[in-house]
Image (cartoon, rainbow, N blue to C red; front, side):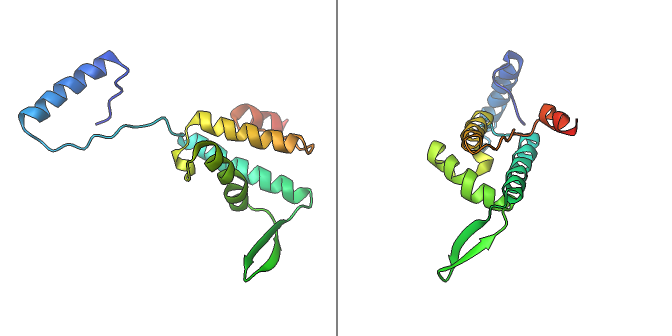
Length: 139
């Protein structure tokens, strides 16, 4: 059962149900649901990684990887490279959060602002995907 305790009617339901559980000495698992991103925001986030990787590839840039026995490899950018080497380090620095699934909307917006500013200074303007920006792109 999920109850929104910001609504008085739900608070009353919570109190009644809690009383019922106490009377029966039941075991319970209480979990606070944080304001994490929605499935639409998740899809937009991964689309954003794709848009950034495509833009970098179109600019002729390549990702330099030094992880194979000290050898340097040049790779085309991918959404996963953008997520792991651009997004995640900013996320960890700003919020000390490792997983993107733990971010809320406000935190996502702050990271987008950092990345947008970085690219804007290089003459590349990237908008975080939204219904408005996708509609505008089609025109």
